[in-house]
Image 1 (tube, rainbow, N blue to C red):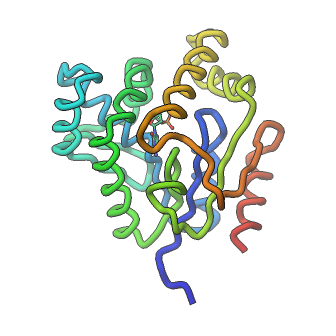
Image 2: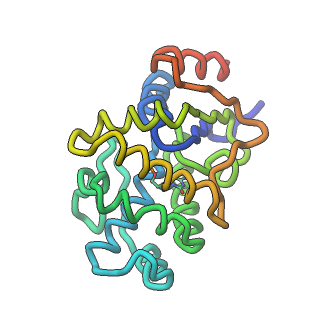
Length: 215
Ligand code: DC
């Protein structure tokens, strides 16, 4: 019998549908959800707010170690006591976050916080880029969601009404390249992950297939 906490790892690139799917899986299974990308965004947000250059690895590392970060089950994010849920999704943070997420000290700090969160919650649906490969290599289920770059860009540009499709697509390509080619914990498909191409699937269909895999 396996009595370790149930971890469902959902990895994949931006726009693959991870957040929507992970939230829905968490509701259906009845275990909490953690958006680990929001943690990296929070570090980038705190750096920008403090006037720290995101490229300054040492200062950003110090800031990440000291950051008081609360990831609430309802999705709100508190950074040093203040609600930053909206700001961490803004364009400045989105531009800076890949650099911050490439910083190995930031990654190791966030990794231990993610493991601690899962211990405290007794398991969870963990969404990110390196959950199945690095953070929880023994996860009960590993899912890698993917979709064509065009479809991912179209999904993202619907979310940000004030940017053109072209600028969203080029920013997505830039972030894909940074996430996939960084030296530490790059976005890769775990050997034992189930890959789902979400390009032409509804959220319901994806969630149903994940629940089937879980059974
Ligand atoms: O999923 P997102 O766009 O909110 O992620 C923000 C950034 O954080 C993105 O550059 C990828 C990075 N990230 C990461 O490196 N590892 C994770 N587990 C989650 C996100």
